Length: 227
Image 1 (spheres, rainbow, N blue to C red):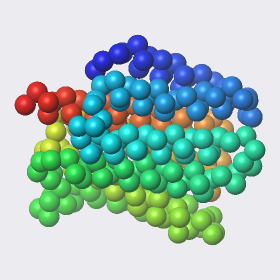
Image 2 (image 1 turned 180 degrees about the vertical axis):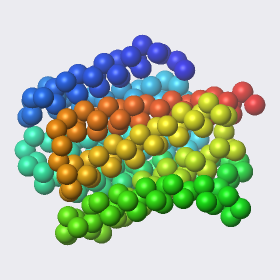
Image 3 (image 1 turned 135 degrees about the horizontal axis):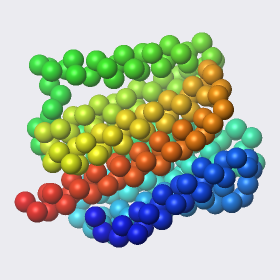
């Protein structure tokens, strides 16, 4: 992958943002969070010719929606009222990633004969919703829809196994798992059990998840170009 220095910059900015979480309302924390995804977009644009593939455009859109979600959730004056718009932006990001995974050319790994491979995903989703359900109130439908989409995104990542090279497969799958973890912690912390230092777990898993999904996709495209 080209420009490893930019990758280092990505993690430096992410680290700064995590540290600045100890200073709520800091304008520097807002700026740092607002810079995370644009750096990742630069990595994507440097490594891929976006115009060559509709899937490339979808990946770019996924990052743009993620960036919008970051901004919505971090607005200093939001008072929490921007949670739903932020949720919508991230929902759209997951839909973009899911669409990329589903439409990647090749044989589907998940078939009727091995559909039970998704049982852990289903069980995880059921446990998560059981933890959250009693506290969701008017957010029941939005959160359930969001949970279904993120688990479909993870299932789409699992389904890539026979479509891409192993390096790309495992990198993207790790990213998808971390993204589900990050979103799960957000939901549990907001609706069920608040716990200290949750922000560190949320942001560290989110930053790594986005990087792995993008870099794994880049490896996928590079492999295709070499064929």
